Image 1: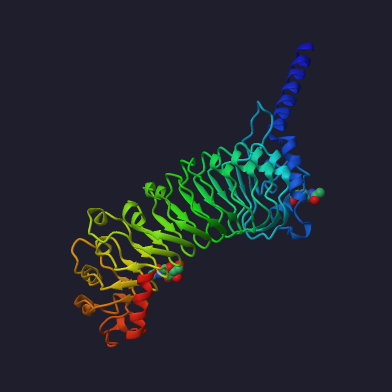
Image 2: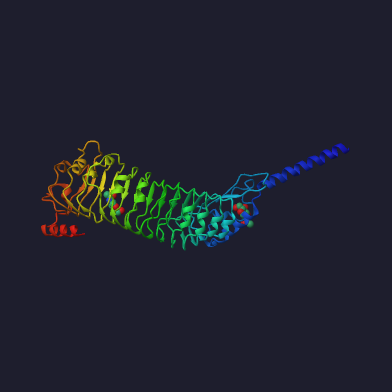
Length: 429
Ligand SMILES: *[C@@H]1O[C@H](CO)[C@@H](O)[C@H](O)[C@H]1NC(C)=O
Ligand SMILES: *[C@@H]1O[C@H](CO)[C@@H](O)[C@H](O)[C@H]1NC(C)=O
């Protein structure tokens, strides 16, 4: 029965071929398996709980084989099976936040060349950020935040042309932000906050897609770069040691909504920031050395301003509060306490505080204490209610501020001598 014989042989070959194909489909790239083994070995065994993701990585089965178990795949994403290529690649590495893994990040992570996402935030990885991450040409999302990484950032990371999200926030990194980061053409989110990074903030103006840049709580010094990434929506550089005047280039940040420069040593006038950034909603400049709020005349641009909150408390502002501040139509919070401001409260500002200035929002929070303001308290103030407004006028040089009004409480007015001497000092500066 030769016919049946050959039929059986063909059937057998077919079955074997199908099985082989199935086997091939499930096999993970050998180099990727080796790299995963190295990554596991760099983590302190004692910190790996048996129930955690890394606790399930024992390599007795293929990491991407989902037929026999789904257990190993914890912490990794595999590319979909591809019969032609005959192998699967590791595309994502995401370890659980708070799993308390301790150890280093193996430089062999650079061998997982198909990686698109690396998320190992909220653990206790220490040591260097591996320069080999630069080999991951497909990388889109890199989150190393809230670990114990130290040393400086590798220059080579600037090669990551597909990176959209980068965070090393809340680590112990030192040194400068490499200039090469100005080459990350696809980057949208960059978080360097809460490290010990020093030196100048490099110019990142080639990053045409960057919307969020947070370098707050570091040790940046020197003056700000001349140009900024044009699409920025949030710029946070608070709690550093930055000095000098604001660069003219900041005026062109027409998408900027939140600017936080608090707690630095920045100087000069705020005219451009307050009146020329058309999307700005929140501006915190507290604890700096700014000297001027800028223009004194009312202008058209102030009514189209989107500024909601302006905080220039604890600075060196001199001169009178410009009338134009009252024309910032959306402004609801104004903090100017602890400066060297002189002159009377602009009448329009008082009207705005009492919600009597047409075409503008009510100024609900007004902090003017600890200045050298003079004159009478404008009458609209006396209609304010402590239930709906916050206002502080203490420690100034007003003719009289009866403590029966809530905005005069907390601090009394300065003595005549203090006002006289303070005014003299403030004029000399
Ligand atoms: C590897 O892990 C699997 C799934 O947790 C388990 O069934 C198997 O016994 C483990 N093998 C070894 C050698 O530990
Ligand atoms: C102004 O900023 C300082 C420093 O960040 C902060 O302490 C204060 O609460 C802010 N004031 C308002 C009114 O937001």
